[in-house]
Image (tube, rainbow, N blue to C red; front, side, top):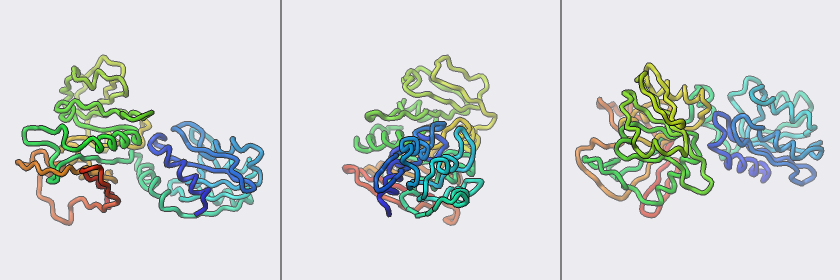
Length: 347
């Protein structure tokens, strides 16, 4: 792989989780063996990576090559199509790592029609960035990651509700980084009432996710410390039309039916592209059983809790046939001191 294409992918990886419903993209402009322009799509509605890189390159882009992590866009959204900018700047060659399967027209063909050489070089590292984005855009739903911290026997708490802290400090730091790369964190009212978590990102220059609270009944204790913390917005989804809150950072979203599908669809319409589910067994189980969850991250502590299993992280009302159970593949494992992180993807 060209190291210039690798640079473009690295730029895209740096902005993963901060582009809303848009994909993270990186671009590098090269002319006569020199990097003359760099760009990354920083946030939804801002200039795309190609535009930033070309604007930096200026006249030096003429006759050069642009390396892009994703096939350049062809549609008018909040910004004009990137293929137009590439053509206008006189780029001679375009190299990109992943085809954008959501485009209504082919960006590479438009460029070829204008005499620009185009080369598609598939890169696995880039595909990891866009696989879930393509699924999310086609379904108009955010990318969903479910995170669980539990004992070796899958318990999130003891039978009397004791849960702080099952996993260690290294896990907590890793979870802060996870929140940083997601637009929102989803939890249930039961978890908030039991643990009063903050769901913020306590890392240097970290991005705080929108905190999404699910409560069909709307029976919420607004005296909890999370609701007094205006660090990040709190969006409550409820079926209770009379629920209200007098804090500016708390928004009440009333839905006649608070299903996962309705909630995710509404979040996507509000610009939420990636959500992290950090909840108790009831909400966690609903998301794990859903076809919309693509990634599961498990943090195992080296303890066995036992008990009745009422806080087992995955529960169903009925006994499922093995052919019907959610099926995952292990993507990566890491040791976080004495805890184990297992990253899985839905098959």
